[in-house]
Image (tube, rainbow, N blue to C red; front, top):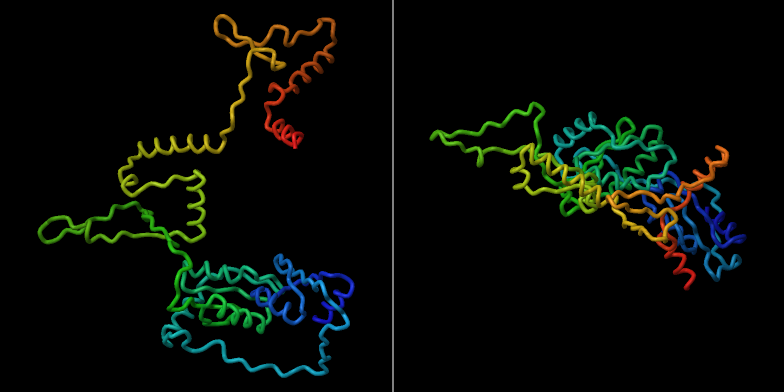
Length: 342
């Protein structure tokens, strides 16, 4: 591969390298080794494509030479990836997690010779909602998905549990910490049967529901949390405090929704108004009569009675195509005027 890069550099300054498969899991490491071994510089990276620049003072005769390998070197011996009790777990805990992983749905399926740039980020996002993550690797070589598991173990980081059935099962570890300061927003969960939770009554007969009831909560995923935050910032969604939400009745809630819908539409579809006077500025100016009713000018659509129907139709269409705005009032006119002045 390095010889091919130098052969391309003899004809052109930039060489394009297309990367697929296991190396795309860690593109930063790939670009580092390309720059170190070839002596060039990565100037652009788009997905799995890397553009390698040879340098301003490149000399093909003084470049480093690589010896021709006449034999295949012996494969290195790596330590065992899957342990019986990894990551400080006991044997029973590890067996229980592997049993749970059998019924767990994979977060994605890896294609053969694909581009796995977002794999590390997808696994980290999945760990925000569950302590176990499974990746489907059906169709890949066993050596490939084992290399992917080893890279995920170092990049995420995580604990490898199993490679059974061509699937990678990983555990986020006991020392896992969330990447977000406020990753989850608690919201009250409404039961499907809509039954009210009865308060606990002590021996004295007084209700102790406020102190003893456990409120069932459900949490938002990080992606949904970002979407809600973006919607609130752009005035598409409305956030209510706990006191306001508890004080809402069905009628007041409907009123708040109607008011917010009108406000959000006004913010989204607002535009500067254009006022046209009654003078001679516009070609289709309007006249106001004594009774206050606005009517068009009498000579606006005057046409000779001797004209044919086709001519009348063409005249009507031309009248519709004419702009009702005076010259210089459109935004494009101000842009053209500014460009002409410059």
